[in-house]
Image 1 (cartoon, rainbow, N blue to C red):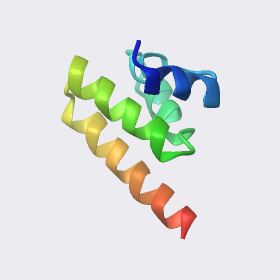
Image 2 (spheres, rainbow, N blue to C red):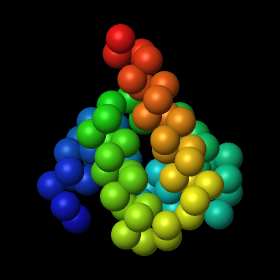
Image 3 (tube, rainbow, N blue to C red):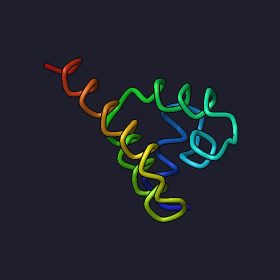
Image 4 (spheres, rainbow, N blue to C red):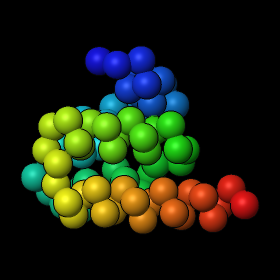
Length: 73
């Protein structure tokens, strides 16, 4: 596991794999919705790109990134 994935786990208790690797789309949506920082989000994007590359999940992650940016402003 990469350093950023380890740090993401420390911050939230979940790894990118745990957030994104469910056959239940509600669990994946919940995993994405609970991302609170850009570091965790980047780790999830990297994980998705390296493993599944699902466009729909990447789009959801992009929307969450936009939401986080608005929250920070």
